[in-house]
Length: 151
Image 1 (cartoon, rainbow, N blue to C red):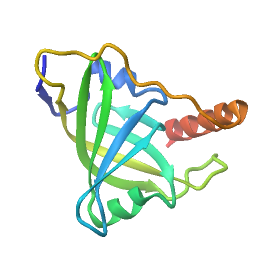
Image 2 (image 1 turned 90 degrees about the vertical axis):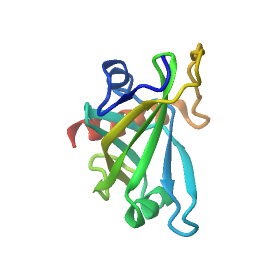
Image 3 (image 1 turned 180 degrees about the vertical axis):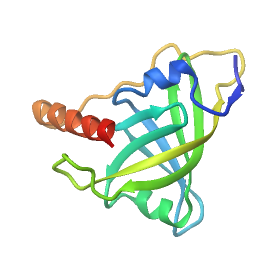
Image 4 (image 1 turned 120 degrees about the vertical axis):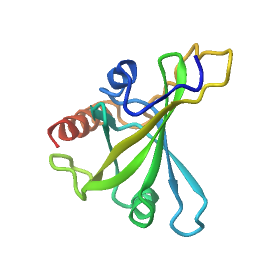
């Protein structure tokens, strides 16, 4: 059913956000004031009201959040598309236990909105393939997800 609004994550979304997955993050661009959308994969629902995500310290997402802390994560899951909006803060400038300089962002959820158009459902969720060293990618993914779980 489309266009339902919740104040926190519903159980299927919480469950889906317990592992790395494709999502997009929308922020307000710090220079233009317009929308800025980025694709990321390191996300973790810490609880029903909080989502963590990790990005490179040089990411435009960081500069955008510093200037305007409103953000939206778009997730395709549970046969639908969800817009999860809230206030983003930089929880850690350098995520511990990870060899890359990644920042940990905390999104405090204000609204979870089912934004799938009426009379339809998602039949296949987006999938991606890491194009660099598969062993190194798997090791890094585990390090990042473990560090986020400890934060």
